[in-house]
Figure 1 (spheres, protein in one colour):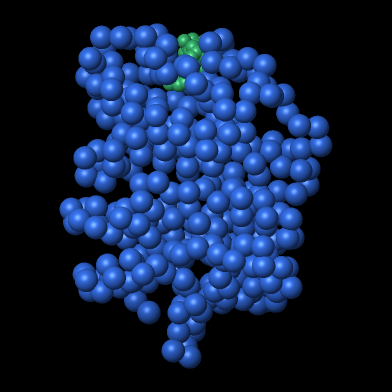
Figure 2 (cartoon, protein in one colour; figure 1 turned 180 degrees about the horizontal axis):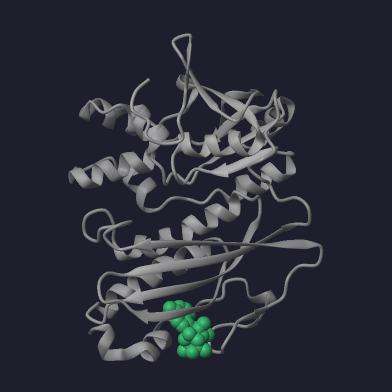
Length: 324
Ligand code: ADP
Ligand code: MG
């Protein structure tokens, strides 16, 4: 069955069940002109939005399935919420669908959307459905909340801070490379690309441990660390060999002869966190959450990032990294 067989309203009917996973603040969900929800007194609201375009952000059957497209469209939004230190609560979404599209495929996409929403207790409270003459476009806008005055910005890095990241970096770009090569195995890399896990729990711990500046890694570590440096008006010095990488990424770069640091610094879509905080606060954080690694330090400067390697410091450009 095609989308054109059931129409816009048939489609909305098909997806509107099981959309509330934490309904206590919901007054009106899907089914009216607008959704209505309550907010928590003393907390501020956070709004983010992200769009994914078929054949640009994902290629069905090659780099993605419909299930992971839905999951990832939500994951990138929850990652932005996590990068403010906030708790995600609700989302609205817009889907542009080709009439020739199989209903089963769109249902798979919604299964991915609902799976991650269930995991993070996020409500789907509305959306829009339009026709696309070519591929699918999915736009998700998520909302979250944070204790008033506590939002973690990019601009708070201070000289003397530790620079740190969560887990390992570069896996998503490695996974994309494996998928494009049509190579078997490397399941952890593929999973990192198709099912990135938003770091909401760590974002909340960073609020509790007085983190100074925070970004999620959606465009690669080079770009994200430069955003912190620029916004803060301080320099970040990153020790190249301190940046944690996974054994699978090391194996993939060895097998292909590709420079592992390209995946790490210019890859993107890791949805891990990069942050700076006072050394004592970082040690306290590490006791509670060991999967964080110091990769450098902040020093007074003009808002640039330097990469230290083999006793030398080179400028780390925000994009277009080509050599060391
Ligand atoms: P309106 O014409 O008032 O904008 P619609 O007919 O577009 O209403 O939508 C009806 C209801 O279904 C609304 O609650 C809307 O938020 C919801 N909705 C529409 N499209 C989607 C979608 N793709 N995903 C989730 N909810 C949707
Ligand atoms: Mg509408």
